[in-house]
Length: 432
Image 1 (tube, rainbow, N blue to C red):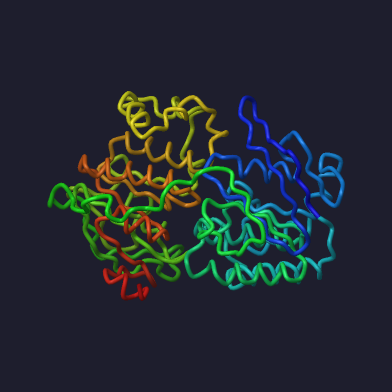
Image 2 (image 1 turned 120 degrees about the horizontal axis):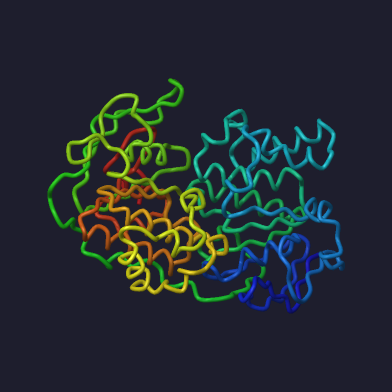
């Protein structure tokens, strides 16, 4: 069905490794490699969005010779940055956009959209506004977008990177059932353990680094002085159901706290309240006795493209503490990124630049939203280094994540957010 021979993607001086593989009907093929290795570029070439050398044939025809609208009705792509591709304001409208754009009959559009939303667990949210979804829910919606057109081949780019531990298994099980009925899947990832789908063939294109070492750091804040005080806060959107319910906890200078929880429980909302972006419906958040607000506290989104404004990392990091920022980038071995165009960076590389940029704005509190989502272990460990380096200088760090192994490796404390309430006994709650 899909045959790739001696194929390389080229972008100016950069080129991907040479790729050779076949994807037959009903098969699952995985491309495993580190962030920035070219996995996304390979998938974009398959749907005709990037030029390539060599051959990519769909049903025996070179994809360059296939009309793009027809090609994308047969091969659907799910990006690792779903927010960049979402076009509609309502969940159902977004999932229905593909079949509507292909001219399907209204009844066919409705039936296919319902089925796609049911597969990813979003049917109950069909009438929700897309901006109110969590990052993981948006990633589910991107998968529904692709499935709604009933493609023959599904390209999944780090598909479960933002989806919580409970959501991954039912979605992957349903995708495997669709493969048994003829769907073919090509997915990317940085380790076989993170795929949640059992591939028939695997292509490795680079080293991804070692898993997180839980004993890397002595988890003890450098001071016992309280910095952040969260007192009995609750929050609701539009005076409807409360997302946060009487949340109370404290953070000390130099302390790293991870907040874990399923998609849609309010982790992002909590971070934005802590950073002063949202005002709590009741309760108070203070930093050193003052109400929280930028630049005392800074929130870094899980979508780094919304945070970065420079043309290159060097331009992004220029400012009053640029020399320190550049020195730090060199210390962690990423100086090669400084003069690359930001739009050419991988998602993981953008994440690192956005976090370093925020850190060198000198906040007292840094709130990081899913900082390791979609990253290989090499870059994930770099983020851990950045976090612990900031904590050593008495910055308090709050990390919202579903990456429990990362939280265990780099946090001083882990809190579970569930049903709007904070729990200290997260192991007992999750039966870990």
